[in-house]
Each structure stands twice: as C-alpha cells, then as structure tokens.
Image (cartoon, rainbow, N blue to C red; front, side):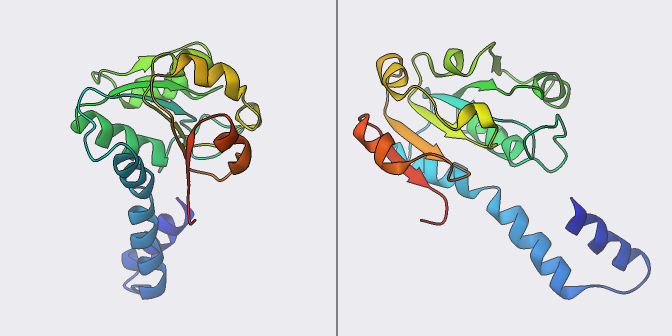
Length: 170
C-alpha cells in the first residue's frame, strides 16, 4: 500500500516514478501467483472444489485488508467456481464488509475451514498457523494440496503427513 501511495503522489505532482510504478505492477502480479499455483496443484479445474484459506489481512496482527492478496485470491476462486471457507484471527468482519454479497463460508477456527477441503491455502503468516496439527488436517481434508503463500511451513513435515507442498518462490 505504501508503494501504491508513493506512485500516486508522484503522478499527482507531475513526476511519474517509473521504478516505483514498476514495483507496483509487480506487486499486483504477485497477488495472483498463489491462485495460479493452487490451480496447477489441482489440475487446472477449480469448479466445485472446496478451498480452505487461512489468513485474510495483508499482514499478521491487524485486520487491515487494504491491498491484501487474499482478496484477489478469493475473487479468482469464486470466479472459477470454487467453494471458499476462510479463517483469520481478527479480519473476518473486515472481509465480510469488503466481500458483501459474495458466497464465502466464514468459520470459527482454522480447522473448521479445512473440513472436507481439497486444498489449504495460507495467505497470512499468523503465529497460530505456524505449526498446525498435520495429522488432524490429513484426516479431515478431502484433498492433499497445501499452498504455503508465506513459506512458514516445514516442507518435510508437510510431505511426511501425506500432503503435496507448494511454496512461493520455490
């Protein structure tokens, strides 16, 4: 959001900041990478798939969703016909406000989101997401794809639990 504000200020004063504007374009493109990785992990078809999404805010310890990548991912999932269950420790009300009228399942716990899910997507690196009970998750999820949008999970631990692991930048 700071890059976007800086680029806007430059344009407003007649000084386009080409490097900052390039960073802004890349930041926007990055928001779609998690969706693309999920789509590949599920063989390209998302219609009717159940996706659990952990983390809505743009960073932990806040309910701020301005420029949050989760909004882009949720939009794309819904457009693709997926069912989306979301959990965030504090940003649930803000997401409801921003996504009013959209069919999203808001749940009470991170594990409620994964019930019957084809994939788990981590969007925000909240502390409570760092060490999930992989055995519990494997028992209640229908699928086995884990998209770690913040690279906080131990890949070997995820694989050992019977999941397919997809990180960012890896």
